[in-house]
Length: 150
Image (cartoon, rainbow, N blue to C red):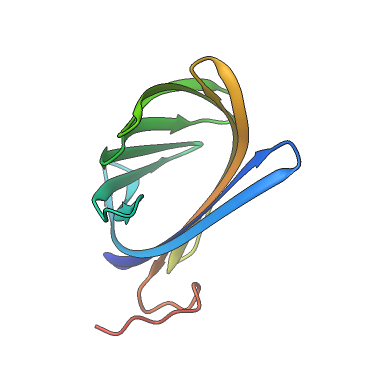
């Protein structure tokens, strides 16, 4: 995969019968270091446009997502494990419990697809179920249905 990538993040939160899906596509950077793979990208989480800097670290059977900016957090996803994370937002600090039920990492020469299913607790109380897909693709690859010209 090339250093310059496109990152598509699609997240779905399910509470009872209600589902809310959010999707974004943004440019990013890919690199490997010490046998681990990384995606780095920025996202705007509110109307102010203040960016949150994201780093996704991929290891065998484990994914870590670090957010810095408008939101600060370090989340760990490992199948069959419950982890905790502080999640700082403009509305305050939340203690999250993350129980990962499914994690899949699929890759080829031009892309890496991460699929994660987990349940979320906020301040000790069950909040919702989530599924997240993160697709990182070389900018010239057509996996996302978009070709970016330099």
